[in-house]
Length: 232
Image (cartoon, rainbow, N blue to C red; front, side, top):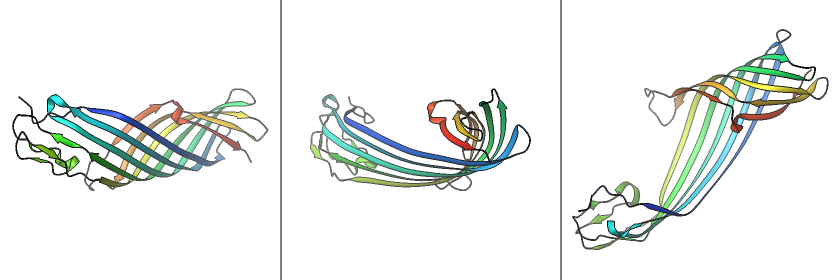
């Protein structure tokens, strides 16, 4: 006896993905005291991701043969983030200092996602009860009139385009280390974040929707930044 809810397994024959991102951060501080400073900054990030999969779906015992599909997607995103900062500097030696930035940051995020799925092949029904509609939301209107008929799929490209526009507030602490190369210039390395984030707006959701919020602590490579500083 066959189950109408059964989904045959997917076997990925070929798959690749590529992702690139670019991030730049600029800030300026003014001294409040020997170790405390206040400033403003701006962060810009852009990313581009592509995914491709070729899948073969088939299991003779379930009554499906020869169904394959190619899936490709592309996502482009940009984030503009003005921020207000308060900094604490603690000198370890004449050339090395440990710093911590307390920041409030507003993110203006825009993304565009495009995908395309192209199914091909045919489906064979072997015994059992008629299925009616199968995977209507994915493959299109696939109808079986009886349980012994070979049914060819009305195939065609299935495209999807999604746009997202969000606003978020971040409050966090970013530690860093400064190395003085000259009297008023050097290198700074940031290596993590402790951050609270609250989404204020999402174009995909109604105005009265409950928007996400959360806390994260990350010290991995995705948070590392290397830059230069200049004291005037």
